[in-house]
Every structure is written in C-alpha cells, then in structure tokens.
Image (tube, one colour):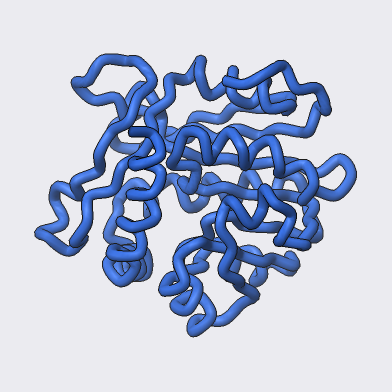
Length: 230
C-alpha cells in the first residue's frame, strides 16, 4: 500500500502540473499569499546563504525570488512539466527525483537545502532526509516548510497515516487527487532526529486573520548520528 501511494504522488503531480502552475502564478491560495511564501523566504535569508538548492521546486517561484535577492539558487523537481514551466519563466532548474538525490546522481551542493511543501511521502522522505547531508556545504542548513499538523489534521484522528488531497474548492481545476503522508508534530521531530539531523529552530507562521498557524517551518543542521529507521 505504501509503495502504491508513493507512486501515486508522482502520477498526480504529473497530471496537476498545469493547474498548480496557474494557481501559484495567479496567487490563488490565500495562505501562500498572506503567510507561507514570505515565511520560507525569511527562513532562508536568515541563514545568509550564498547558494540554495530547492528540492521539489514546482514551477520555480522560490528560486526566482531568491535569485532576485542575489542568492545562487537552483531548483529540482521530479515532474518534467513543472521544470519546463520553471525554465520558461527563467532560472536554473533540472529534473531530479528523490531517488536521483539518494543515489548520488545529483551533484549540486549548496549552503541551504529547502523543501517547501514538497515532502509528501513516507519512505521516500525518510530516505531523502538521510541522503541530504551530501548535498550541503559545511555547516549548511536544511529548511523544511510543511502543513501544520494540528491544522491539517482537520476532523480526522491525530495519528500518522496516508491522506488524500481532493482539491476541494478549486472547481475541478486539478484532475488528479494527490496522496500525502500525514505526520504529527512529534513524528516530524522524531523523523529529523532518527535521520541524523539536529533541529535548530521550529517556527509556526501565523495567519493574520485566523490567528492559527498557517504552516510549520523546521530549520535543522546535520548532526551526523543515525538512530535507526522511523
């Protein structure tokens, strides 16, 4: 079942590439417009990196935003259609899957690695986090922004497990439902620890209207000690 869901993640994003590009470029998600886009930019800039690798870059908005601030930024994504949209808008982009990174096919190094709402699977994410230190320069940082578990849980039980994004409210613009793996806040923290990372900071960017966290941002550095699988 896990392997099936992992495969369906990529399939869904192949199908949804055009709809996602349109949504991002038209600023249709209020939480992005009001909170989370700036939250990830601020988290990156606070570390003053000279170079950034954006993993799961989508249509490339973050790479362009960082490049405009003088940072050498590169984005990679497993969906060729998204990488093509990104290249058309300008910037340094390449097609690369999590597996490519895990197996060392991606040679890029950076002062900061960013995963902005792009850690969607279970085993694939565990494997990726274990491999990411090889992509970082000395004393580099890993910055992850994801949905806040307490908010994303909704009415479902607060336990780890696979969920399905049906894109409710987008009037059928997204043709394919997208599976993703839900983790509690404790499980996220444990995941960083067991894959060898030391969590330096946890941020909860607040939505200015609801006064509830719009996301959670983890900032970590490689600790170099693996404590076993999650």
